[in-house]
Image (cartoon, rainbow, N blue to C red; front, side):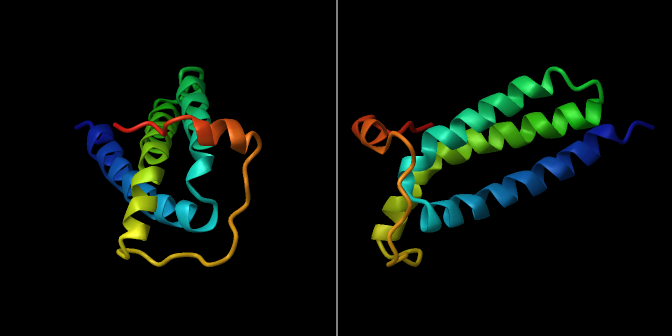
Length: 111
């Protein structure tokens, strides 16, 4: 009996669940302008998963990279949910990412 599929499914569910938490916290502490860095890290993780010899490691790294890419597209949506009052607003100033002016001029991606 091959249990790989069910364990990867459980791990994927756990990683996606953590994705919801980091999107909420990421927007709270960092803000929406950090989306390209999260997306870039996700792309790097997916590319890196191609070079991992372990099936488990490769699958988990790819799922985590995909979750980061999805989360980077959700940061803008989370900011809107915060403005609507669904989530708490952080009154402290958020750190600006490098190249914040250029990032602010680009439209955030949406899946």
